[in-house]
Length: 329
Image (cartoon, rainbow, N blue to C red; front, side):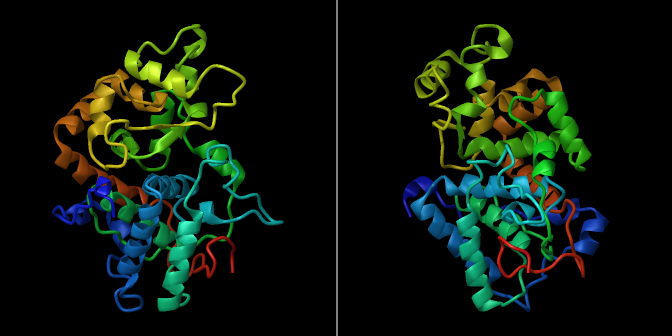
């Protein structure tokens, strides 16, 4: 693999187990597949590695797919389901339409897992592990993932439209959404650090470039040199530039690190929802800490990802183990 991925194989101390609530211990198990699918982690890692070899953007796409799954009615693989005659799924919800990616990668992983361990591993667990590997293989931290999630049997476009935060929302609204899910302001700042990799389309930030909040001027918090660059990527017009992409972190675009926070301190956050973290004293202090202490960011990111991956899980006899991640059995 190209050196730009900067794969790191040093694993930070894994004391994240101590941060989990007792209820999570009861539902999920760090050793869940040790006997029934012992090669699971290796299969997922190799598949994600192969995907990144051909498409560096896929790391961010898999991470985002996991977030969009868990934030809508819990981690039950609903974002992976295609529409049926019984429900309209989440793939065409506004936050996912023409932007959610990685479904084929999950399909490939599922096929490989089914060959090794038929009808054993849920699509939800596969997606959760793929998100961890996406971070790890782009130079980020490693955390142990508790497993045993089962797949849901339905999905809701309406729920995705209502529950996922938008990049133009005020900080108070986004924080309230996180709190409603059992997360907090710290989790918001930490998980926003996932924007250290990936891209966003002009449609998600063009409001900052010309007529910010009806002022007739660009967003005054946006760095002037970045503004000029973004205006060249997203010229004014009829919206034809809306699909054009800009890196969320133009400094180390494909490297999972803490440069995202340094960018915020330099008024170079791409999305409005990123830069507003500097507009509140509480979130700004966390941004400063993570910009100065990368290991603190890695530690807290792993802990917040465990919390995210434990939201609304189905276990025991609830749900099912899908044979095909796109359809219920």
